[in-house]
Every structure is written in structure tokens, then in C-alpha cells.
Length: 163
Image (cartoon, rainbow, N blue to C red; front, side, top):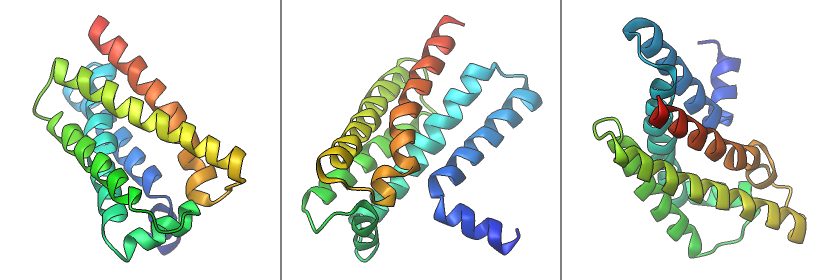
């Protein structure tokens, strides 16, 4: 992989997870003739709500990574960062388990993770408006992802359940 692409994906880690989920879903659809809503839902659950949240847990929990996250968010030290890490880890485990556990487990995971992401997005908006926090991890692409992705997940869940 060319160095510039590798650096871009490293700097945009969420995009890297998204690309991986989309590629795997497309492979599943075309190679195994799976329904698109089910494939995208599965790989978004497993990779975005699962692996990406476990990645976020590691970055929020362990120093000096947590220090870098705080700087990117425009935060000073807060013990609440460990609570954010715990929530990321818990939902990450649920997302990974979705690869093996299906049915209403997917429904519960989508509802819980989507609520968490959406409310994190609301928190980013409040921090932007109240404190003028334009830090990259507060007002950048993460903000848009936190608001839009839960809507996509609920839409895919409805398609999958009705299909």
C-alpha cells in the first residue's frame, strides 16, 4: 500500500473501518448471494460497532493514547474518559458477538449502539456551540458520523427485519 494512502487511513481510522465493512459486505453479497441489508448490517455491526468500538476503548483507556484522544477532543484530563472507554468496550463486545449471534440480538445492539453514537454526536454539537470546541475529534468527521451512522443502522435494521 502506498505510504500516503496508509498515512491517510491511519489518520482517518474510522474511515478505514468503514471501508473494510463495505468491502466485506460487498464480497458477501456478490460471492455468497446474500441480501444487501443483511450483509451491510452484519459487517457494520461487527466492524464499526464491534471492532471500531474496541479500538476506541483502547484509545480512551490506555495512556499515552488517551492523552492524544483528549488533545484531539479539546479536553483536559477527566475521569469520565474512562467511563466513555467502558461504554465503547461494552458496545464493542456486543458488536463483535453479532457475527455469531443473530436475530433480536442484532436489534438490541443496533438500538443501544445507535443511541450511544447519536448522543455522543449531540454532545459534540453542544461542545461546539457552548464552548466553541472546533477540535478535530469534536467538530470533524466524527461529529457527522455520530449523527448519520445511527440513522443508517436503524434503516438497515428495518429493511432486514421486513425483508
